[in-house]
View 1 (tube, rainbow, N blue to C red):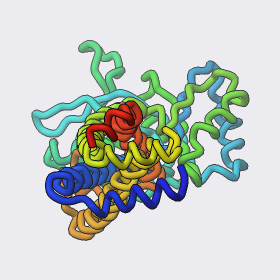
View 2: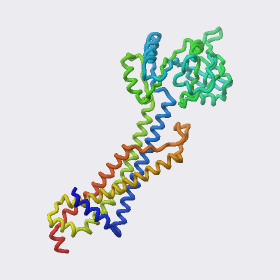
View 3: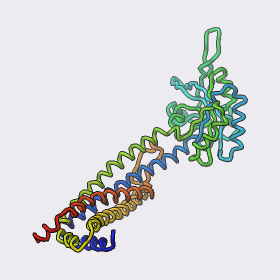
View 4: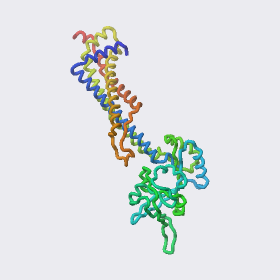
Length: 397
């Protein structure tokens, strides 16, 4: 593209009037709306996913090791010792999980019982408990407590499914325990069906019950969970099932990314429609400037020069629309975030509003998309222009 072609293209654009001016304004407006629409939509998805990741990281362990070996007395202390020395580990906790039931009055519900040493840091649960850590009491999930109508200081019966044999038959073992704390983890399954109990008390009550041995780990950098799990795999020798927070939420984020791609495709059609307006505009310009084109050809200008003139006009219009669209999207992003306009249900989405986060990569992708489609739209009338018969044009003129 020559400087001469650029100058002529700019001159032609400044000479727009009447219907061609209206079509050019419609073309620019179409690109503005579609650019802002794509950037804001992607920004909403990015903001939602980033905040959801942070909320999930706050409400669940980064890595969970589930023991499936046959020598827990040897294997588990060994792994706990390795975690103690690992500089990437922020905190960890060993849990014995039992299945049981809880009863208050006539209401009974199935529960998971986490046996934890109350005299040590509670890892993931540490800052999520309201109440005390009395060894002879239990800490109940927030939703479970609400369902049973229990507050701190009330009592409930914890029932072990494997009980004792009596002269009157088999009897499940139960113990009436004080609720000394309420757990609000932010995870539905835990808050709705879990109680925490000191491990010594749990071992007595659930003696003979099958248990699941779990190690919950929080990392200093949760986003390195996959790499951390990979580094542990060779050490654990298939005696543990390793699950990261990424694995636990993979279907959710895959669904969000699929939806984002689908909406991006739909909004791309808006840019395509706006590009058709550029095609219509340039076809009109070819008709208006057909004599100029013939004269350029007579004076020896190449077909590439003619194509460049109209190609540049299409690119200039698309760049103007993109810049104005990007500015509009940033202004709207600022307003949405300041006034928290996108409200959602906190109990479902773990956040009260969705922030918009427009990334530089999104801007680059949309810019390349706009330029590519506008160039494609500009090429059609450009090729039409160079196929016109010069002799016929000049003779008719």
